[in-house]
Length: 64
Image (cartoon, rainbow, N blue to C red):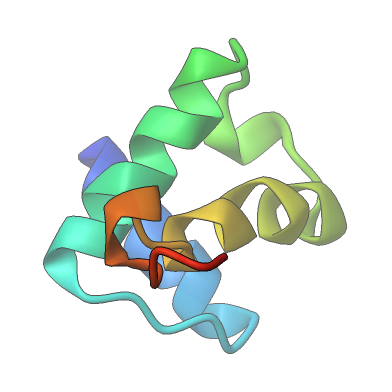
């Protein structure tokens, strides 16, 4: 199974819903830390992937 498909299924099972670009970002986050998704607990996977919900700083107002 492809990593994105596996990650999508795994995250969907723990009620994390991602759009395609967010899912790709979540995969990059997991891989950038050197983790293998199927070796992570649900809690660890959620903790890492929550960063995919963040937006670039350029989306924030100038006063932030």
